[in-house]
Image (tube, rainbow, N blue to C red; front, side, top):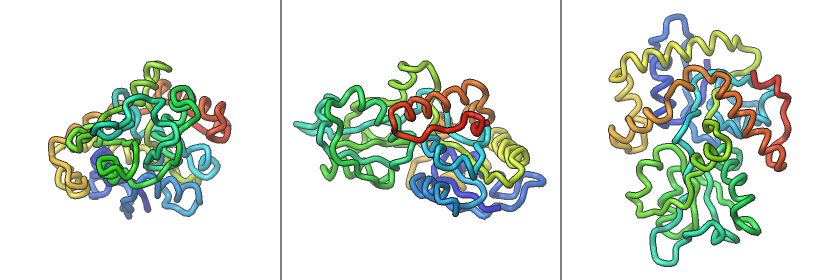
Length: 279
């Protein structure tokens, strides 16, 4: 079975056992490691693998061909994207200063960017200037070096941005949780609709159970793909992004997804979807 997910520690932790052939009855995986912007595009084109990790924000463009799986993704609390600015004199310190500035984002169809647009609509008079899409691991150096004015970061950047001398302008996850009371939907696992979604979900859950039961087993695999992260940062990343929602979205998870996509559709940022396609 072909699958695409990111090299980030949460994904490699969840899928290690399946990728290593440790899940009884599961088909062998042919893994493509790809940035979220790439997987979002593959899913939208309908030319990607049978199973992919994408942004929840990209779901409106893919649900006719792919089914959202109730497990394996990233959704939680205290784990949202951050908007960072430079740390030097004259750097941006207030939301209104983002007007007509250059902001880097990891994908135009990422949940991070969607949350940013919902926040900016009420906090940045006149809107921001140019949006620049770049791989997330390039964003912090670009902000530090003054190539861009602000950067939207995800994943382990939450633990490492201070090492770049950067300033957090807003925690968009905290803003979302305060505004809605709901967890933050970040990354979804989807499977082609001609697959047995129940079977795929079962293999993902079995892989996750193995990872939780044998956390040391995946360490080498996780660190080999973690883009120079220290073992402690990788562990912090996993502890934050792999949680009960990864095993089962549940009603709270589905409510968060619906709320995000409905609010975005109200603002004209994404197409409306048939609620029946979410489950």
